[in-house]
Length: 485
Ligand SMILES: O=C(O)c1ccccc1NCC(=O)[C@H](O)[C@H](O)COP(=O)(O)O
Image 1 (spheres, rainbow, N blue to C red):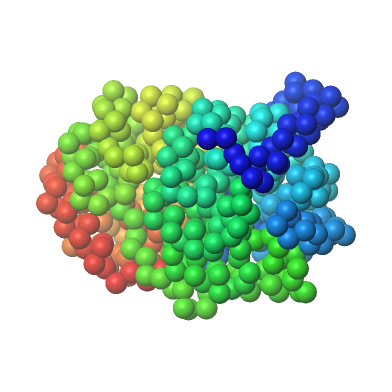
Image 2 (cartoon, rainbow, N blue to C red):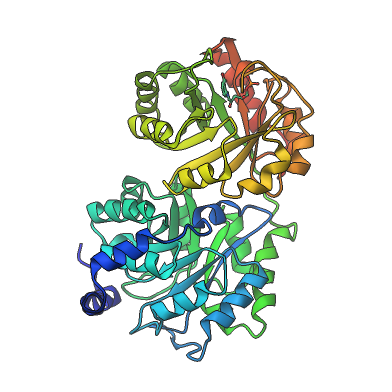
């Protein structure tokens, strides 16, 4: 459907802006500059770090808006960006639209010079030219609004954004727009409380829409956040990232205001009990994988390591992935494989995540992350790469920890002092693995408060064959565990 109201007006202006910009700098030139950009901080990793104890705040540079008029026209973007960085914002959003928001690409380049935080270019993206332009100017993410793009365009722009090492924030305003976001393989979903046709804000929209997201999509609540109470309400609904513009820009003490928003999750009231996610690893047969999903597993692991008794061929893995529901995190497990090998399996099997279970470098993690993949890096308590290196793997979506002294790189049924992982995690989401069984999983959870638990041999009748009664027992034990994160 063609956009109406404000969207129609702004898009008409945008088309003229793009034509003008192309007159000054060709598409080829922007592409070259974007492709030459140095990889910056990962916007996706920044979004993944928030949780019940820590709100992620994307602080916005916003001088004016079509609904509120001028907000702070004399705002110095670089000075504000420094304050946002000091206050602990997880990313900075910059409105570059000129006519209604009075922003510009110069604001973005000025901010790029003073911060290492990931930068989101917020604009009305309707052409690939703007994506290259954003990359060339130093952005790490771009806004893609579902309602102004065709399904095909959205899919192409998501892929293009990732090709040049950025990540898109795909924005919706209702549950009906989610299907297109899913089709485009969007990971970060902005749920805008403001209707961009009428410009009316309804702060209940994000909480209403968030239950429709899949488990591996990360929601960001946008528009209408005016203080810690709104953050609290969002957190109660399962939203942990917030894009905040006007109220930050208007605050008398910017740093204190941002700090108060971030620490809302530490007040105790929002310590929502969160059940750890469950990854069942080492599946080799489609019907067992489907049964694990039906029983409540969130992720399955498919081992692409030839020496493992649970090793799967590409054809086997692809069949398992095809059989699974779309919200299961299909994870390829690799040991010191090349980027090309991993990407070939990702493409052939449509994997959503990769688990690196060898000596892979932080750069490899970053490289795979920039393909839009969820990346789990395995670190060990009893060998290298040791869990105390977690801070080198900031780009990892989560760190999987196990002991690491068995004959295989993983899957050894090796119990250990799981609680030691908790201190070394360095703020990462932790996946605890190694020797977990239905009988001991409650103790593992209370010792480690993990983001997820991972199990393989503890629910097997033989290597690669899952005992579905044991899978059921394990999942029940996790779901009924008194797990406070
Ligand atoms: O499971 C394997 O055979 C394997 C082989 C090579 C690298 C990793 C492997 N498994 C990784 C996993 O995620 C296992 O689930 C994890 O090591 C825990 O295994 P277990 O102690 O058997 O529950």
